[in-house]
Image (cartoon, rainbow, N blue to C red; front, side):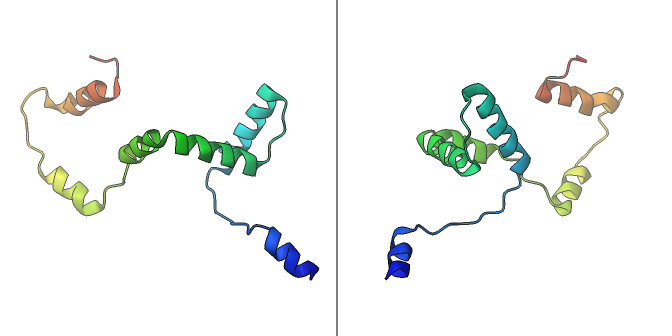
Length: 106
C-alpha cells in the first residue's frame, strides 16, 4: 500500500543533457551572492523557464537569430560567385566586416 501511495504522489523526474552546466553553476553562484539564498539548479531552471514563458517573443527572436552552420556545398557555391572587383577590392571583406560588426577601421 505504501509503495502505491508513494508512486501516486511522487512526480516523475526527467533527465536532460545540458551543455551549459558551467554557465548554470555561475548563475547559481551569482544569485547566491546577490540574494544570499541557496537555490538548487532545478529551482533556477524553473525560474528561467517561467520567465521564458512570460517573455515568449524574446525566445522566438533568439531562435530566429540563431547561427545555423552552412554546409560545405553552400560555402563553395557562395565562394564561386566571387568576382574581381578591381583595385582596392582586396580589403573589401574587412570593410564589410567593419560595417556589419561595428569595427573601427573605416
